[in-house]
Image 1 (cartoon, helix red, strand yellow):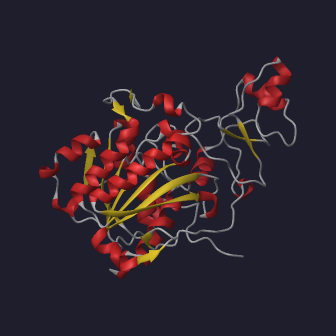
Image 2: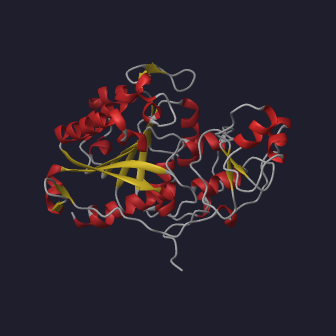
Image 3: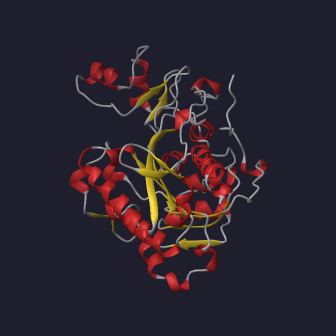
Length: 356
């Protein structure tokens, strides 16, 4: 049987990070999912940018970055003359611009152009323009490669106009841009998680890898096809999570084999529609997309929420990650799975950076 390139069950205290593949700086870093992926792939992540003080404390506690910028990315970009020289010699600039306005589960077009706050104490931001602030930072820093992650909703409906502008802005910033819709479950992650990754290389470097991609486009070639064996929930299920309260337990007791979620039980008990987001997880299935909500994915076999260990396995976070008192569901649900990013970073190094 094919082995997985990276283990989904691992510990920070036991990991051997070589730090010899190049320098990375991570924006919108959250708890460091991407950062851990780059480290697993052998990169040296020298710092981060994050606006949320609570998750930034988590990042610092787990990663001890050399450079930590707790501020709006627009502020970071405007301070370009004050930034350390290391940031102008990056191999990869990484970023996961907030994506809730493009999510198919959200309000989408109704929220575009509106200022929002993610958590208490933050300055208001227009979420759908933060991607372009990130590209503007790339234009200033001029790293060799830029990687940006977002939800698959960015490729749907009216949002495609944003993708066109992303390509245009990256070109104006000096980069060849291409995007890939990737599924984490094919990359050694025990979770079906579809995400868009924009992988861009500077014009002066990308010319070494140009290849005709279709009848009209010439792009720097990079292979982002993955097909690792799926990992089912039963391989690590422990049923050690917090027990349900009375209402959830009542619906659980009325479940039937094959139920996708709790909606059928809720309809039976109340005659009303609801609880479509409480998705059951079977031992012979891959977990659906883990969200920041504790009840979004629940075991079918036992009336408990996922344990911290199970959440870490599903997200490929290390078992000894310090959540600093925050919800593991929130940190992991908001983060790129480390193994997913490790796979992408490895391809970038092997096919591009190692050949420059």
